[in-house]
Length: 398
Ligand SMILES: [Zn+2]
Image (cartoon, rainbow, N blue to C red; front, top):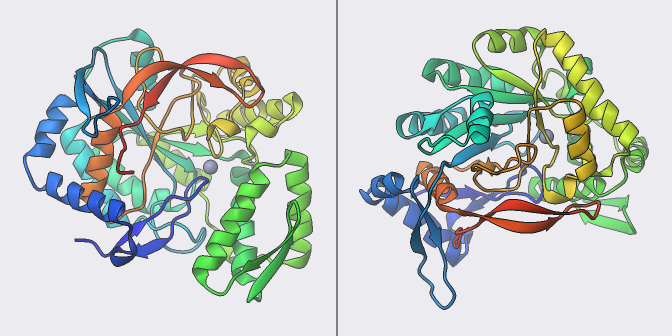
């Protein structure tokens, strides 16, 4: 039994700890179910079926049904930081938990580099349930905490770098928001969003949720407006520059990891929501970042991760720019598996909750592989309707 759980934020990754006793009945049930599965033979049986079956809820039934699945299933895991110290404040993934997760994956799944997964997706070959590991943003604790584990277990991974952070050595803009809100005098913070707002910042949890609300608001703005808002915000709210130092990977660390088989992708220049960008800005964020990283790495940078990565953060204009700059793949944070026919410029991932429970992690992986894949009509932010493979969630307890 674990005493706390992490909750996903509406953006990329903030989490707040909640005691077990404060969880809803549904959340408690999920934890108990995961524990029961993990310590029984049922999980082993599920793993045996997850490559060849999907689970579907049918109308009028509360019990999901197994259906046969022909083809291959590819899961991509999305991590951000590994470690709980320093900025940004929301990281709660302890290195020992990460190591336990990697040991579990190594023991039970086929793990491949993203490049190989892309090849297999396009070739349509039939392989067992397969996983690729990815990390967004390029924080330094990936070198100190994640890399030793990946190297020891010989697990391939891709890290997506933010061009401007690599160029300047400083963290992305949203960490500055976190820092400013964290150090604001309190007990309240007045901010102009669409209207004037007053946020309560009595506790660290209040400050975190306030910062995330600001970041979510800023994601919705045009990129130029977002930059102006940030400059104006920092006029009245100081950022602690010291705590923002040495938070990102540096080039010697990246070269060492690259030599050990870790691959690197692009995550734009400034971490905007790319659906808010003009085509000129897309050229800079996607094209110039790729050229900058390739020159620094002396290697091709073929993979891309959409900042924030939700459907509203993607656009067909961005997809065209990805093709223009010859990216091989692009990952989102839309949850689900990928299979033959999935658009490789809109790959789905499973965001890993920074949870202490290995049973919950194992259950999340199994759930991912039991999701069904079907065609659906999707409206992108710029109004283009496309037919896409969609995963249908069976996460009834999520
Ligand atoms: Zn990111």
